[in-house]
Image 1 (cartoon, rainbow, N blue to C red):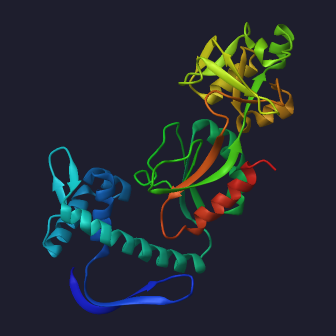
Image 2 (cartoon, rainbow, N blue to C red):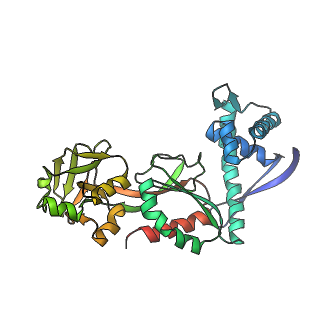
Image 3 (cartoon, rainbow, N blue to C red):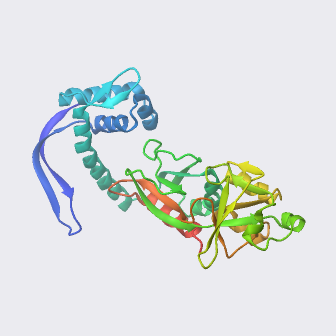
Length: 327
């Protein structure tokens, strides 16, 4: 149902505690229509928007049609295969999206101020990082925040945070997506590892140049197949041509292959930290840094760019930063 009224719209302003307002005639309509339009605009699909919102696609279609009728303009250009924004749709999206973000922020602050920390929280990470760094701490997280319902998406592809409704992602490369906020979780360092059994059979390496002739296991990725690099404490870099005897695309499988004595491999410190501490793996050259393409590597926290970060996301960031980042 659509109605009209005059009202004063108050918007929270800067850090000085002042409030600005706009006094205007404003058409007040069911905000669900606007939210449905925004979801379609973001994912460019009525069906996908309906799945994300868990409603029937016909509801989405009716909402957008009602919104267009009330505004007197067409917002979306529909074809049998694609959906795109019209010029009016682009302009409307640019104007209305920040207002709804601000409204969501106000509601979020009100809810957070009078409620226990809880709700749905979706975290995305690579399979290996999720297995090694997140799963071991889930029991403690659940005990500390019992009202938070976790959804974990462990996938080696870079998921779209907005489209897949991800609240927090951990990635091993910074994002170039301007629609998300990225902050460094920790620097990472690659280590050259072998199993005690392999070292017993093949002998101790005295220097990186002795890798030639050994069985090497590497990631099946560009840059990892033909060369590794080592850097000593003095910053001297040595480029080492390699011919791996085994290429593996998954980090967990690569670690298992090295543990089983199939060869020597370079792996991120967060992946092999426990195995090195227990003696299951040997850090062959602990004073050297290793890389395939760059020594500057890190794990990054990403979350959707919003004017307000929910408490559930903030506490998750603080919790996993404390648990994952080495002391």
